[in-house]
Amino acid sequence: QKEVEQNSGPLSVPEGAIASLNCTYSDRGSQSFFWYRQYSGKSPELIMFIYSNGDKEDGRFTAQLNKASQYVSLLIRDSQPSDSATYLCAVKNLMYSGGGADGLTFGKGTHLIIQP
Amino acid sequence: DVKVTQSSRYLVKRTGEKVFLECVQDMDHENMFWYRQDPGLGLRLIYFSYDVKMKEKGDIPEGYSVSREKKERFSLILESASTNQTSMYLCASSLGQGDSYNEQFFGPGTRLTVL
Image 1 (cartoon, rainbow over the protein chains, first blue to last red):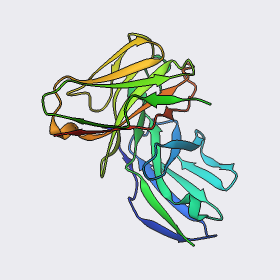
Image 2 (cartoon, each protein chain N blue to C red):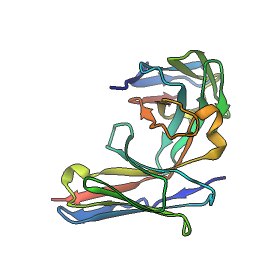
Image 3 (cartoon, each protein chain N blue to C red):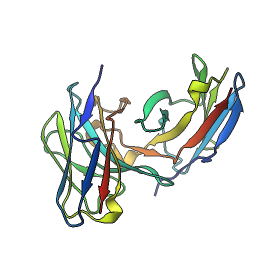
Image 4 (cartoon, chains in turn orange, green):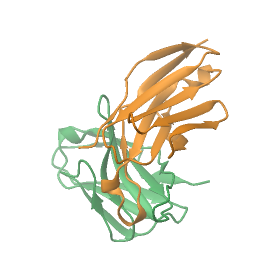
């Protein structure tokens, strides 16, 4: 069984600071990694994806991937109260990739609270 | 904008009833997925489909079946609902281009309660 682990939190960060969210995965063969944001009562929405080792930046968000350590993280700079949500780490599961479909295995999510 | 809609936002059913959850996407996506989301367990894949009439099992297919008769519609069926199937059910779709990643777009979810 492929595992994706996240600290459930809550992670409390003051407004304007950097929020750091972490995720580890068990399948060394995993190639594709995703971060979804889910507001309370809403469905998940994709904010970042990363395939290669290193950093990928998109606005205030930076995804970091270290395949040797099987570790992926999401940094949120200049955190805003609107960033308060649950962040889901997901890994493409090759078992669920038939016919071009990209089935994902999700972690349980980290609840992030940005304190004004 | 991609739009994924689900037939009901809230649903209450009795144990033993047959339950249909419907999902429709309007962007001609090849792939469709059904997940359930439970506190402490996260999102888990039930079934997915990469083409009309094609279906594949996910992590937790037991107690569920699916139907995809048309490209835009993917149905989740609970043959005989049980209380442990009380959950939030989320449908998603993605474009489908071989090995390339395709973003999954989620519907608003159906909160099912089985009494």
